[in-house]
Image (cartoon, one colour):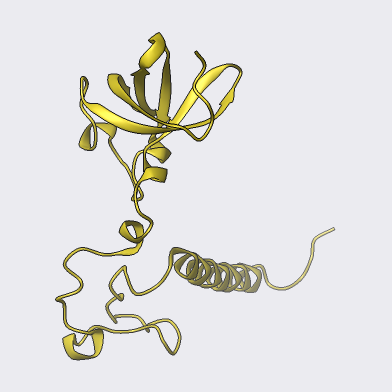
Length: 152
């Protein structure tokens, strides 16, 4: 019997690869839990989360080319993705003396804020604007060394 999309099944991890884990479910079928579908956090090594022979619960995702795809992270509560362990007891940044980016990026020599203070998108936006500014300075510097005149 073909597993239905959206159903939750129990299966056993049969093999682990660098891009995910294969899970065998009832009916003799097996499918892939891609590395991006294992946990709500970044997974560098699948073996940090799964071992061969381990029994896991998986959610059946839409199949591509008749192959089964599973997700484990979609069965985990969303609150776990946004909570940072051990930060609840940490002192606020103002008390700990850490620099904050509330009024713009830190000047050179200032420490970076803790990674939980900004969303990834905000960090990426800041990185892009900083790198664009550095590239503009570099191009201005190179143009100034060329003497400002064009060759024919």
